[in-house]
Length: 307
Image 1: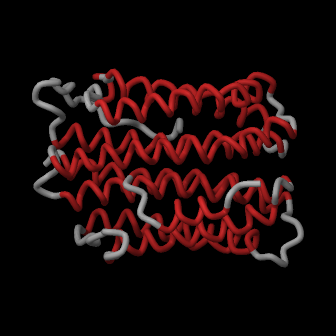
Image 2: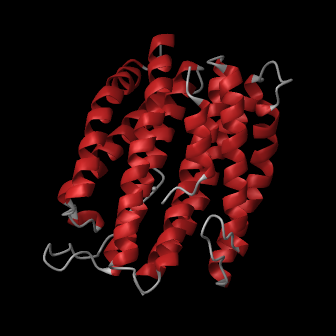
């Protein structure tokens, strides 16, 4: 049984915070180790390291969709692509990837953290690969993914926190609140996939009581952070957004969230005994537009860091 204390502590404090539907910023030169990343490069690092957290949850969600026999072939292919993107980005964070504007990581502390993530990824990936190859998922596969996805997310989150500290102290030192905003807006992408995964685990019947509690906390944090991105939240360290274009984009997220939230509320309700196939299909359909529009907002914040 998962430790609810960890989940609560992980969700209620700010996550110092991008998948085939997401594109990475390109055209930014690689960093020179002697100079360190530029402000623009830190924006890319925060975006893509933050995206890694989302990808841990997107993979898990896609695996459960396969188990629930929702577009098994399509979701198996999505799962394969998501895993490949996670793997490529993990290598790029360490060694640099000029194609997406990632500078190599030189911080020994962050490199040690990436070592931990490499080990967890090696444990997590076999079940992912089996499901994507077979187009089906066993209960044992889902149990393994349910057990290992949160430790992988937790350690990836620590890496993002280290990158965020570096960015605030160096490349983005003139505007440390922007680093936090990129981080937390990027976290919203992860939360969109985490709550979808928890919803689907409830529908699948895997530890439904625990996942109801997890889902309640996840969607509550998503909603609070969305409000904070718009109007500020001192506890989360969010100054709010005054730029009309970003506020308009966050308004698009809010519109989708208005449709998505009631399904999360129903699934998290202790009195809900089962979730209908039609609601599962609707969540499978709507979660990706929510992710896409939230990602568009993150890209806008990232572009602010390059100015």
